[in-house]
Amino acid sequence: MDRRGRSRGMIPLLALHTFSEYYRLRRKPPVTAGLLAANTLIYLRPGALDALLPSMDEVFFNAHLILEYKDLKRFFLSPFCHLGEPHLVYNMLSLLWKGTQLESMMGSAEFASMVAALLAMSQGMTLLLSKSLCVFFDSNKAYYSEYSVGFSGILFAMKVVLNAYSDEMTYVHGLLVPARYAAWAELILIQMFVPGVSFIGHLGGILAGILYLRLKGLYSGSDPLTLLLKGLSGVVSWPFRFVRGLFRRRRISGRGTVGRSPSGWSDSTTWRCQACTYDNYGLLSVCEMCGMSRGVSGPPSRRVSPQSEDLSLEELRRRRVERFEQ
Image (cartoon, rainbow, N blue to C red; front, side, top):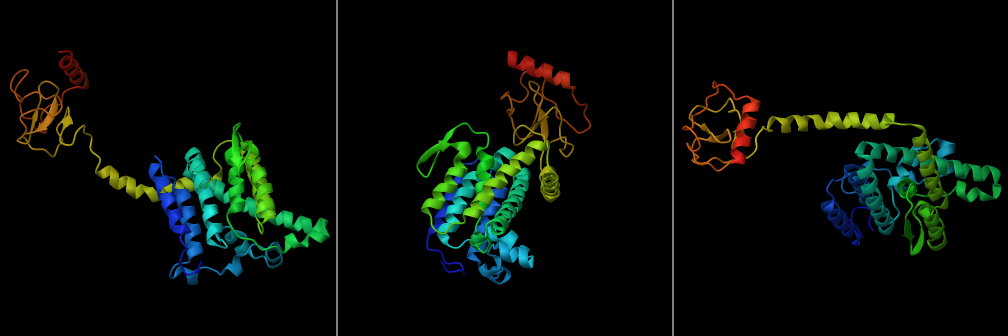
């Protein structure tokens, strides 16, 4: 895969699969979509984005460099970088499956808060494990100097959260295991059969998921980050809701209202059905609501002006009941 945006075909398949999944979802999870797009764009580095993003060598997670030089760029950016197209596509398919379920259950604001927390926790756990192995087991300096990238640590944490309270069984690479232990089974199987993966990074993700659940259990209600994200979401969406409200009208069908004529209609544009009190356009000869002809079922229909006295709610209800009991 060329870093300047040429794909060997796996990314278009990922995009096609993502669109098909989103099409069938009743509620489209925006945070999951944003994470998928961000990871893919960072990998492809199209156009001017290539010059803005740091190189892979600058963002590799390395415990020694992070602690020695306080290189927080490696700490926060390494999860969003991937070594190759298969690495990216596998992680994004996993994110699509886990993210849509968790975001649908939790809501977008809380899901975004959880992802941010799991990112910090999983990276922190990986850093702590690497340093601890170096301090207590001097022969394990390899973990302390290990380079790694990818979203898989967060995905392991998300799997722990997703399956924490499940009593079902699930398949992990062909092996049937209890769902709540699926992350542990996948950790062992991947380490056995996939060379070059970061055992410490995946283990840090699992421990981060467990820690998140423990902290969540101690605190009832929304966390401060979730409240902040909800507030920001409300501020951003307010103009759209305001504009949408301007065009929202209280009506039943496309051309009339019940009980009262809008103030903008003139005396010659509407007539009120005597059977159901529905206000129709003056050009119509049949009531849109009940189908009665104009002037039928009672005295001739009178035209309604904005100054005419409105019928009470009880009168409207009584007339409708009488109409449909006939």
